[in-house]
Image (cartoon, helix red, strand yellow):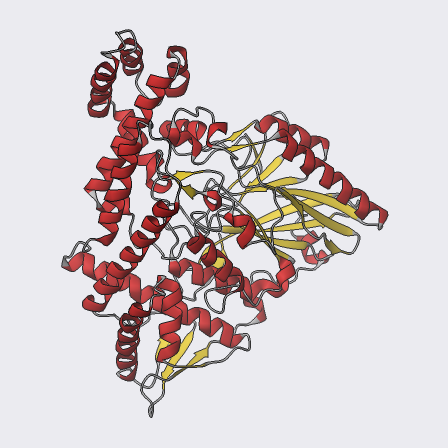
Length: 196
Length: 401
């Protein structure tokens, strides 16, 4: 089954979010470095450890490489993160969870997935959620994903509904297996075990 | 009978931020710093070690003539030794292809401690919550987090209990965890940024894990009782690795500490006896992070680096006791490569889960282990492997074909 392309976040917001993630990771490393007890002063490797930390922090904090191919790869990555976030929510909706969502849920979901918990990160996440809402409203009634539909609310920007596809019992790869069925398969011992 | 089903997952490598691309790949400054760190590591080993140790430590990792050059560098006066070693190392750095491969291999995931793929994590969460009614337990055999930093461990806890990107709908009693080497990475300015022995894991997951050995509640079905006993064989000190002078060695090795093994055996015997007294037929599984007698299947450099940096020390004692205790399988993670094998000589079955969500090039997978009793009440174990279902875009895992 072919799917229409999913939401492509803009290159600008993608670049800003990825740079922010790098900076947050760099901050964590520096915090840990600041909190760690210093090693013995006579250690002859202190200089290389410093070089390693400094170069990693610099790489994390720097502007990501920018060219059309790299930008597109990053946009696809971010798009995939949102897609599977919604896929996870659709799964919960099918299992009896809520199926009505808003931009605030996108912000919260992406905060956790991208590790952007600082107050100043919220604006970027809200921008991303805004781009998603605008894209969704441009879809014809609904967007058909692999796990179901995303249906925009025609009256309120930012609100949408997930309509997960029903899952037939036969689809469960772990549905209970009867002893009879097991016997028919020739017992349980795994023939793939190999002597090393 | 319906078998007892355990979803075996390992090496999630959760961190506060997911990875998009390896920092090692995208920064030449980081590549240079890593090379310098490994170079300094060898220099440190040469300066502080005994000449006879060099061959054992670097055999295979460095070409023979370069080991000889390092040995020769030690035969100069005290004033000249630093320069002599530097000259020998310069030759190695520039000329030894094995060294370069070792840098690329060993430090890609160890130095920076790369994190997880957020998309795969959602697939895994959805798969677990969907299949939870058909599972008796979800066992995570270590490296839930990619470091022992508080923020990375917090992501691990959110995966278990948080509102989103989590398996919080799975009942508490079904979630079984134990620490891996990454979960105990503490920051150090000495060597490669991380050292073993971090203890925050025990605090962060005190509701789930009791160090260093834990017997989980038995999983019962009919006459069958699956007893899982877990142990943490992570290095307790940076001095406990194969070659303490080489700091890269301390990052990923495990060690079968005799007192932990004794406790593992004691708790196993106790649980088995309890279950027998209650009228069940116990089937014992051991859960650890480091698989004994694992053979790295990524070429000779991979194999050598595995023996120097990633293997389980004193593994024979573990396999010997496992056989004595009639352990039906040892469940492990660590290697990022799903493998099922019988250990040579001891004949103990080892089931490696592979990595479920780490952001690295290795195939991702998890496995369901079905334990049952056959018509003669003999235990039987079946393993079914799963991989992310990327083709249908359904945010889940599917059975491997």
